Amino acid sequence: MKLVDRGDYTNNLPYQDSPQPLGHMHAYALEYLEEYLKPGNKVLDVGSGSGYLTACMAAMVEPNGLVVGVDHVKQLVNLSVSNISVSNSRWLDSGLIKMVTGDGRKGCIEYGPYDCM
Image (cartoon, rainbow, N blue to C red; front, side, top):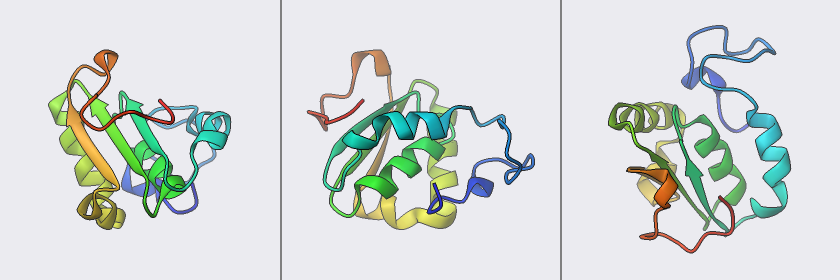
């Protein structure tokens, strides 16, 4: 999480140690999934929202992994691309992160199979 600036994803006290409107429980999710978020692994982030967790996952699977963020709200997909582009556009440019608009309940077979969802 040190490699992803939380300030790029929320304007409301991003460095205060408390839940923010961008979501919650990100640190717990990353901790629980840590054994699956290894360099080179492929990850599906369903309900990617602001893109914050997607970017944190990318930091863990780089340089040759893949994180696919999927959200059914096109505006959130656009927001996540914009947020990630602020400090980590190289992850989008290199293909480490792919953002998809769709129903995450159906997965995203185009880039699978995944090591972690």
